[in-house]
Every structure is written in structure tokens, then in C-alpha cells.
Image 1 (cartoon, rainbow, N blue to C red):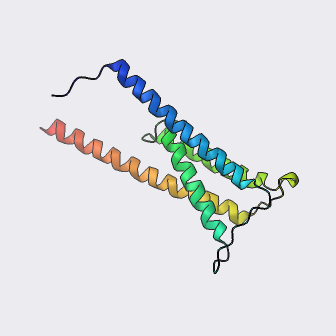
Image 2 (image 1 turned 45 degrees about the horizontal axis):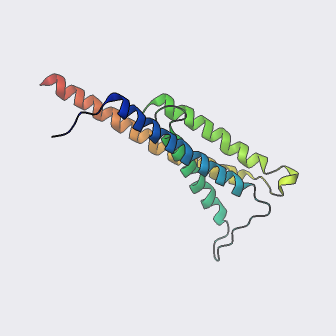
Amino acid sequence: MTQPVEPRAHAQRTSHAKRFRVALFLLYAGALFTLTHWPRLTLDVPGVERPDLFVHMTAYGLWTALLLISGLFGSAQTRAGVIGAGLFALLWSGLDELSQALPFVHRQASWDDALANWSGVALALSIAVALLFRSKGRSRNDHTTTTAS
């Protein structure tokens, strides 16, 4: 037999979990910002002309997923949460690329890198939207089943 959970204990666990998710996002965001602004950083993969584009897409896809999971813009299970996080991710990834054009960074900004960033953001948002529609459909079906009984 399970013991009922006290509301205060549940709220405390939820608070710790949220802080962990926010900290995880901030650590990743800081590491990504550092790497994208590291002077003269190069990535050489034999036989692949621009491996950095795949890295840009993957890195910003993960950045966006962690932002959504962190809940900084609201729940990823709500339209507002996904839209807020998505707009911020698109803006930030573009600014991150643009800031690499600053002379003291010793990097260069390029449109193809920005498009790869935005592709990663779009991929993560597409998955979030699909999950959002799936959960909305499931809750609608649950409600229909419950009211029909």
C-alpha cells in the first residue's frame, strides 16, 4: 500500500527537480557559448567538408531541448511554453553566431552556421510540438472516454 505524499514534500521535490533542470541548461548554455567563442577553434574530420554544420545543428537542438525541459519559459507541455522557448532559442542562436563577428573574438560569423543553428532549434521545436499535440490528443481521448462511461 502506498503512503500519501504530503503536498509540502511534493512541492519541495518539484522545486529541487526544476532547479536541477535549470542548472543543467545553464551549464550547457555556458559551455556552448564558450566553445562558439573560443578563438580560432577548428574541427577537422577527414572526408567531411563542413562537419561544423552538423555540430551547430546538434548543439543548438540540444540547447533548445534543455531550454524546454528547464521550464524557464513555462511548461514544455503548453503552447505558450514552446512558443516562448522557441522564439528565445531562435533569437539567441542568431545572436550567438552574429557575436562571433566581433574582431576581438577572432572568429567569423556566417549565414550557413546560423542556418545550421536554426535548423537544430527547429528540429527540437518540431519534436516538442509533436509531443504537445500527442499529449493533447491523448488527454482529449481520455476525457471523451471518461465522459462516455
